[in-house]
Image (tube, rainbow, N blue to C red; front, side):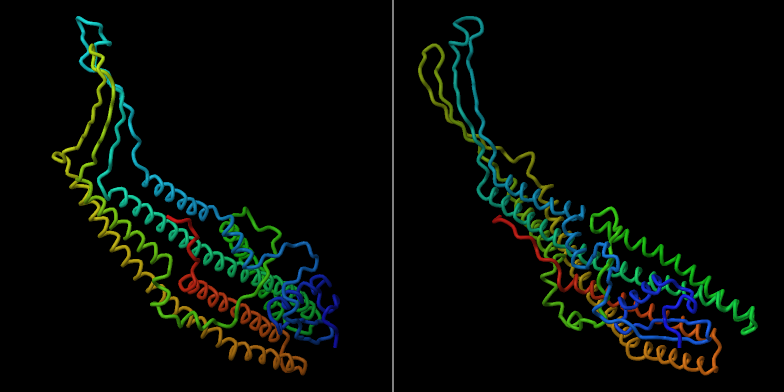
Length: 457
């Protein structure tokens, strides 16, 4: 039986064969490599590859990109996350400003200035003093609590964005990984289909097969080419999406390293909502927003109570040059403006925040239920492929190969079975993608990013 890498029998260059071997080694620990050896009328299908050879770079020039590295780069470079992080600094600034009292005022006054007689300014009562507004007791303390609540809200919103970014990066990485693997398999199938079409034409010209078989091989070749074009667009879009999340212009020269997880994490579907839901950043943000709204309402209720204005001044009394001291006290009268509108607005904001907190809790529960169902369905499909479908298609290919060697099947039957096997493998990769996406969603719920450490508020 002829060897796998012969150009005369296969129609592929040695580099193409090497690339084909490396791809299947990268994706399937016991990969089914479809080597079609035409010429002597024989076909060899061999099992190649080990887990230790996953995603090697034969040239050694490509930059490797793992999932963990992609997540780290996104957390460091994503502009949207940086913008949300800046809100924490803004909230801290507002909290600091809320602690500050209003500045004192320096006052210079000249009173009882004679206009027609006397020495003019010298005869006027002259004073120099300072005045300070004293907020009503409890107002500044309420402002400080509002500022602290604002910081907690900004921190929770930052943790939400972090969690969403990590989830989105995982999903984009899994999709890019699957797209590239599918493209590589499709490229190799195109090579096999083109070689098969050429061989079928030669056999038809030699009278060893029918013209119908030649047409079937050519149709499969065109279908493989169109599928490769579509997968090429999928690869470009997946890379572009991941690069955007990572804050990079592109991912040119990057070699994705890793594989989709094939064993479901059952712990993700077992945690009760009572344990993770209160700690989720979305729930914490909703509570922080409600706390701030309630503090704002308390502060609005104190608004009618007037701030006291105290002042002290010293000077001389006009023409007598007698030294004087003045004490001043000013209290606004809440007659025309009782801050009723502000109190009603703050009370309405409390109601809005309560409704939003309830909506967030309901949404998280809804996502949890749907995520569990999606994860369970994906796990069942993966298990069905692993336990039933893949073994069957591999056994079918083995039997057809034996039958072809014994003359029981036509060459086109072998090609159809090979294509069916490859498509089953590709479909299995998409089932794994669905499983990994479902787990990324559940991890965003159950294992979100922690709140950033902050200074004492």
